[in-house]
Each structure stands twice: as structure tokens, then as C-alpha cells.
Length: 141
Image (cartoon, rainbow, N blue to C red):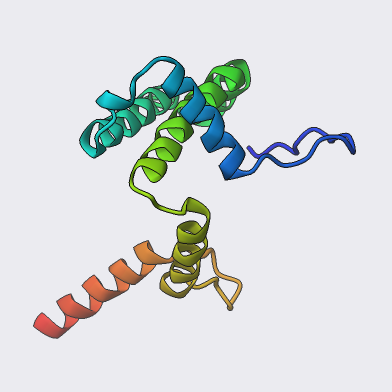
């Protein structure tokens, strides 16, 4: 289901988290919304926008899901952007360096969910949970 990104011209360069955060803050400040952006409301903003994203996939599977994604790709991208808006704003308000925290978290995830070395499917946590439950059950029998 993954698509290759469109080729970029040499003038295109990646946009940094800092640049995106500046856009978010300018948008917020122009509207004088900062007074509404305490940690609770910021977290709720993430939740609401994530739910709107999830609506695009609810009850759809297989070819129907694939077709929906193709038909609504732009709208899905907008919902992902809305989630990012709230994530960037939350990180800013809580003085969290999102880039650094993300890199550290990915390192933790690499340890917690190691890549399969035996050519397996890499189900990670689910497989470990299943194996632990199975061992626990065998030990109790």
C-alpha cells in the first residue's frame, strides 16, 4: 500500500521541525489562542484530530480501504497535518525538543522491538506477549 514519494526538484529541501513549529506558533499567535493551550487542552487536541484521522479507516479493509485511501489521500494528509500541528504545539509549550526525544525513543524502540534476524515477520511485542503467555500457561499446568 506504500507509494513512492514524488520526485523532488533540487530546490525542494526538507522542512525542519523548527520551521514547522514557527508556522504553528505564528498561526496560534495571530489568533490569540495561547490562553487556551494548557497541556490538557493540547493533549485533547491531539486526541480529537487523531480520531478524525482514524475515521478514514474505520470499518474498511482490503480493496475497499485501498480505494478509500486513493480517493481521500489529500484529506487524510490534512488530518495527519492536524495531528502534527497539535504535537508540535504541545512539544513547544512543554519545552520538549521533539527531534531529540524522538531519536532517543527510536533507540529505545530498537532495543524493545529488535529487528528479526531469522527472516521472520518481525511481530515484536505481540509475538513476545504470546510466547510469555504460553510459557506462563505451561508453567501453571
